[in-house]
Length: 291
Image 1 (tube, helix red, strand yellow):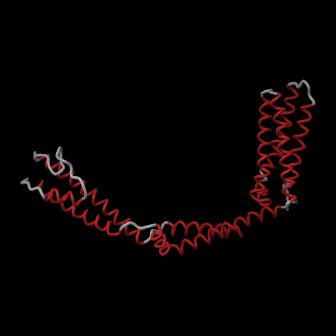
Image 2 (tube, helix red, strand yellow):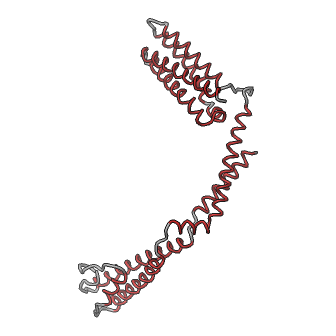
Image 3 (cartoon, rainbow, N blue to C red):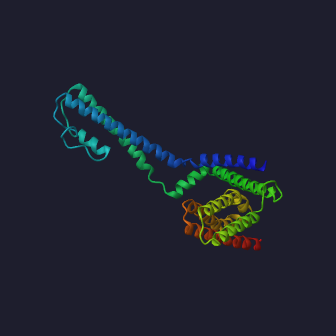
């Protein structure tokens, strides 16, 4: 039940922090809106200019006003408008209307650009304070739910692992499993060392012994990570599973070497696994001594 409550709080917390975290400060929202309007107005003015230039070309008028090979209109919208107003030309009604529409669009651009300029640039402090006033309370509440839900879920998960206990069906203490793996690997190592001239039958036998270790106790040992973390913490788990993972890799290498009938490599890998498992047992002893 506690875990379900934690998950509900987590879900609520994620929703609140995501929703209120995405809120813009009022001033920045206005500046963003004004900037968007200015950008759209500029795009509309550019489209009208293209249309005006196309009509000039259809009417066989000489290139001017930034059309064709004439000098392009550069600068701000106000400077472009000033350039257009300084030039007078007699042209067809349709072309004249397109020119006037472009001039009107430039005037709108000037208005929006002035609005953006008047708002200035907001510093981080101003934006943060504005955001906090708009959505800070909701974000803080969501963060509280998020932390509370995570804490409850972790406590519930830890309690569930502890409640399994060593007497629960199918559950064996990590130390007991580690001892079984270490002893079985040491026996395998001793039997391999005792052979002066191993045969293919010996390799098959040792391969079968190794597979039994890998598929049974070693697999269960590696799967006990959550219980180890719940008991010894993340640092303790790292201290144990760093050499343990090394032992697992060496045993996998030994199996591959036995399949390839590479006896020296197989023997060296098994000896390395024994050393890694010994180091794991020492790390476990140190953790148990610190409890």
